[in-house]
Every structure is written in structure tokens, then in C-alpha cells.
Length: 138
Ligand SMILES: [Zn+2]
Image 1: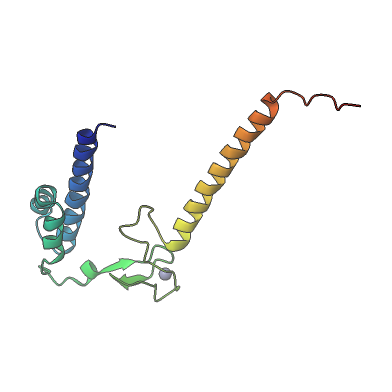
Image 2 (image 1 turned 120 degrees about the horizontal axis):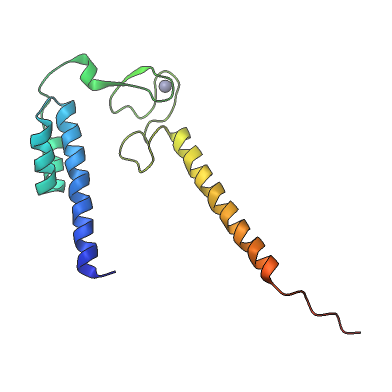
């Protein structure tokens, strides 16, 4: 791949990710989502860090809690482990796979299974194409 093409695509993805995260953070903290999306987009990681450092605008109890994806119990944000069911929530946000740890494990397992099946199919195909072995010398 052309270096500059990769560079700009990478920059664009980086900006888009920072844009989305900054907007999300701003929303959670009660700030203007669009404004922070722009800041995240243009300033990238720095904009995102600024959004992280934003003070909360409001003190609604619901803004700092979210339901556990496994059992639905309400939890304060930032919990690493569910107080209700013990599910590990470290995977919940920012992970390439969405969901609780057990869900992610399941997704990874399914991926591995699919890959294994594909490899199996390929080796079967090779087996079929291989010419029959020459007769053993007497
Ligand atoms: Zn739970």
C-alpha cells in the first residue's frame, strides 16, 4: 500500500475515533456533543484528553450509572466488576468487541472456530486434489 494513503487513512480513522469518544464523553458529562465531536476530530488525542478532563456539568444520578450488560443491575460507571453478578466489565467500553468479558470470549471462540473450519476445508480440498500415491514397489 502507498505510504501516504495509509498515513491519511490512519489519521482519518484516528480522528473519527477521537471524535466519537469525545462526543460520547461530552454527552455523558452534559456538554455539547457536536462541539466536542469537532474538537475530538480536529485535535485528535489532545481533544479527547480535554474531553476526559471535562468537569461534569450536571449531577443527575443516572448520568453516572449504567446497567450491567450481563444481569441488568445498575452500576456506577467505571466499575471493573459487577456488584450484582460478578461479571468482569473491563471489556465493556473501548474494546474491539462489544459486551462483557464472557460475551467477548464467546465471540473470540466463534472466530477461532470459523477459522479452524476454514483451514479444515482447505486441507480437505488439498487432500482431494493430491494424486493417488504410486503403487508400492515389490
Ligand atoms: Zn451484573
